[in-house]
Length: 408
Image (cartoon, rainbow, N blue to C red):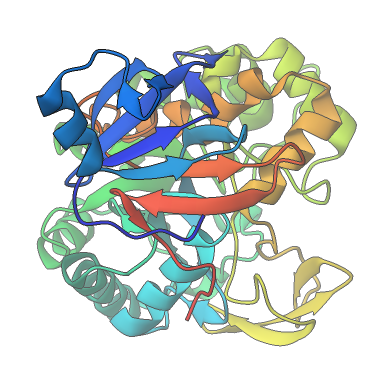
């Protein structure tokens, strides 16, 4: 299925995931990186198209027919929270490093992503957003960069997780404005602790600039979370990790995230950050359209065990877990989106059709790109993934161009 073509492409003879259901007997046609048509499958009789129109025959001759051989054709995965991969770090790396991370994750089915910065010195973050923007403008040859996720620096040291406490700062509209200017206004998502001084004002300002605001690394009470929602917060960063846990008299961030339908939650579905049974519980209790699967992957993702970097901090990878070398706190993951999909189906027992939107349509909606990403439909980008019956990625197309299985 290793096919490249500059004109029209016809994805045929597969199971297509359309509008939340599986459809057969349909061909998906793409041209110039856009899905143009979804039509009834071609039928040929004695070497001629059944319609018999000569112009139809000429059009078909000009197409590249991609025979899916009964495999599944799905929208590409969209990862809103990823710090690196394939040996490359987003925060401390160059624009070329960001592009290499994009190629690695594309090989696992991710077609769009938000490179995610760690809390760092201001100068480091300023350089990081410029590097991400440069990679975005140059193109990555892999997953498309659709914006930037700032995970910090406006976080609460009490719930720091793997974020460095000494680099955290109070919420500042001026600092956020700097990142917007340096990135050409490409910040799509920001994680913030809403209980900090001036946080609600920054949340309101971020929303006014079209940024999705996520609550994370926060010690907020239930009422403080409600105030953040009123100010415009609509997202929760890696549910259960880096936040005040649920208590029966003080629901905290975790409890509010489960109870408030205005909030969409991220889940790291690796079975390490959140126990599989609890993931199943969230799937059964939270409205499924309010769940987004992420990787929180770091540069070590896809690499051998050993010592790596995460935004300038040393981390150790052992037995599939990433931990800070100094404190042994969990520090990101080795997860890829294709594995997150397989895990979610295994942990929950939900049908594939119920889980897929958590990696496609839901994240697209959360960052305001659902008009062109997250589903297969005419007019949307031809970001397509071919899965076999083991839910393994067999081919990836970003805007109609097949991505190499090799990240480099």
